[in-house]
Amino acid sequence: MPPCDFVPEKYESYPYERMQKIREQNIAPSLRTYYKKPLLLHQGHMQWLFDHQGRRYLDLFAGIVTVSVGHCHPKVTMATQKQLARLWHTTNIYMYPPIHEYAEKLTSHFPDPLKVVYLTNSGSEANDLAMFMARLHTRNFDIICLRGGYHGGSPYTLGLTSLTSYKHGVANGFGCTTTMLPDVFRGPWGGSHCRDSPVQTVRKCSCTQGACLAKDQYIEQFKDTLNTSVPKTVAGFIAEPIQGVNGAVQYPRNFLKEAYQLIRERGGLCISDEVQTGFGRTGSHFWGFQTHGVVPDIVTLAKGIGNGFPMAAVVTTKEIANSLAQNLHFNTFGGNPLACVVGAAVLDAIEEDGLQKNSEDVGTYMLLELAKLRDKFEIVGDVRGKGLMIGVEMVTDKDSRRPLPAEEIGEIWEDCKDMGVLIGRGGLYSQTFRIKPPMCITKRDVDFAVEVFHTALQRYVERRAAK
Image (cartoon, rainbow, N blue to C red; front, side):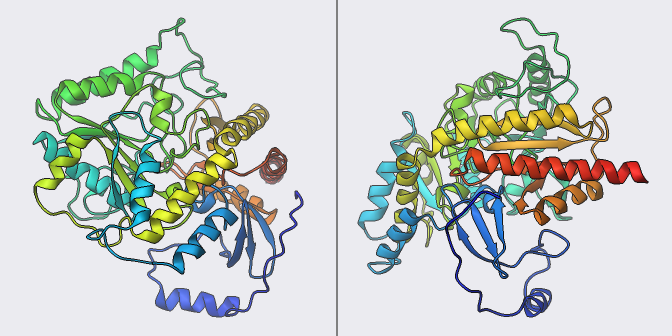
């Protein structure tokens, strides 16, 4: 394990067994924990987490893609402490410096005309508001979304979230229509030149230079949805630049550009869900939509925006924002002084620490190292992503691309944890390892993580061979 000179404080809270009992009796069971023996985490420092026994872990999941600049980043911590002593909260019915300073700083990272921000508290809330704005502005109702997308768990946004495990047996999704996911690994079309990634799928590709047949086929499916499932005019289309919960799924190049054009021809707005891809995580650009050569009408932000502090935002044009001003729409905590100071400190840390460039350099290095494991192990079906937004999809074999059973993936996942590396999981069948660490991770950390992952894969193969 790479060295770390940080020494965590001594753990002095309840014993592990009492924590387990409280969890069972007092915390809602829908809030599930990872691992057979859940971790009791005590402290964090940059890319590292420490449990109640002082054991150190390399965090490759960043609190579900949320800790953007590092756990307890000193710049963010210092700014937060300073504001805590000045003013925690007063609502936006009054003027106070942080909201104005932050609004200016945040929107300076966006191209024209995306210069107006509405601050909220969570990604679900931001996407909920984006839907509302699109419907108000266009006076249309229907919204198109991609299968496999995750856009929130609120009753409104569940219509956009297209993963069965998040669906409950209650009415949701009125006015939301899903369309085929342009997944070049698992979908019907795709090959070795389709996506914007240092690592391409191993599927064969018959495309010629500058022409992607897979993109054309998926666009035809998109047109089919527009021609059969919705009215002649729509409110909008929402997509993540790279799907997060579904396992870092990437679309063929230029798919989003053509989809945006088709939606705008129908009078709709284009919404980019940057909850996981924003703030430099993709490396080459600050926002995921920029990697597709598009400018959306509405952008939603959360997770990495506050490095773990509960805040989110909707960024849009003046004209679209005015649609919400016809009546009251109030948010008590959105844009409170403390949140705005945290958000500004995160932006400063990204710039001062060079974290966007680090995401590109270290992320590309990690993708290429993981691709070597894909070439070595039959069960590693696909390695994909951009920057530090990475997915490793596990299969029974590369020819069939059948998902490796979840319980077998769990063996590899548990082994990685026992060796000190924390990884996320996602995908429709929980078949994909999600690697989205704090953006301060180093190449030395990557070497350690890849070595651990290699060992876990080798152990899996040996166990199966012994049966």
